Image (cartoon, rainbow, N blue to C red; front, side):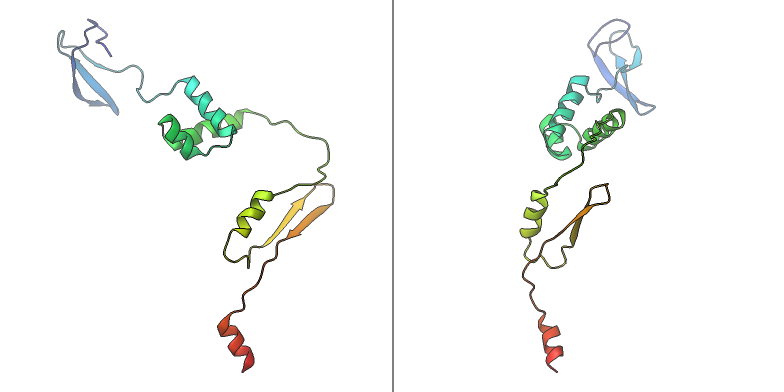
Length: 147
């Protein structure tokens, strides 16, 4: 960042104006602020962040890889999502498989109270999937029943 008047690279910090750092040139004593904010990211960085998101990475992991805030990545993805219209499929859905949900539920110590999964197929037909597991009886409840 050089002085806009004399193009010197010798400067010192000279306070903050409107939340932007102000500088003072040591040669011509001209005071100036930076025209472009230093935290703006290039369009290439934003595009890379969007590509990584579409590949399945999370906001925090993208932020760690690109060394930027995960909040910025979230904001970019959200803005992009509002601008893009997704293609609509006119074919009816024959079957939907949620393998990751089953794996997640089965990885828990108990599957009691995991709930029901209802898939609406929009044409008056729905699929209900019930995941059952071994129910562990409660000790206090059993003792109350025997009394």
